Length: 178
Picture 1 (spheres, rainbow, N blue to C red):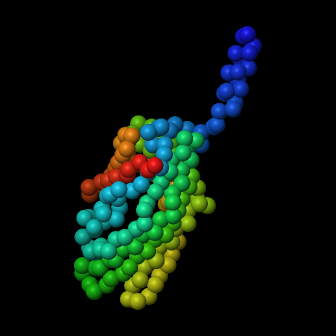
Picture 2: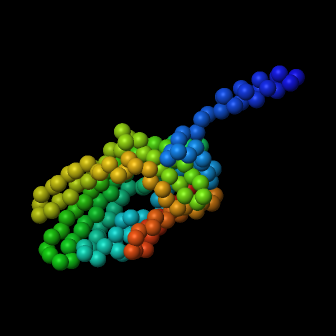
């Protein structure tokens, strides 16, 4: 009987899926597991309130969705965001367009989750129209670095808070998807 228990325990131990590593952690918060839909806030709304050298208008985007899986992996649905920016000090204006998606691993502990995006999964470009000329560049490599964010989570909602030195934090609200 003892050998059967040891064999069963060993089988369970080795058969359990390994959690993905993100920034040296394998810890996940089960509250975050699932599909989350953007509800309000975020960096676009933050820019409207806090970037005083320019006036940001016409922000539009598709449904922003992120899925946290119990194995420690995550993926976003494709993102498509546009915005108009007008300089407050000159007649310069531009239209920005960002498209992208990401996948990778995540971990969570102590009220902070960390996203570790797979650099090969990040497909983001930024296009800006200035004086009728379109300039398109790939996003920088900062998206590929681990990104930690404070959060709160319950059965139906998640709120992330990203401090910004000298300004109010970027607060983003999500609702749990079905």
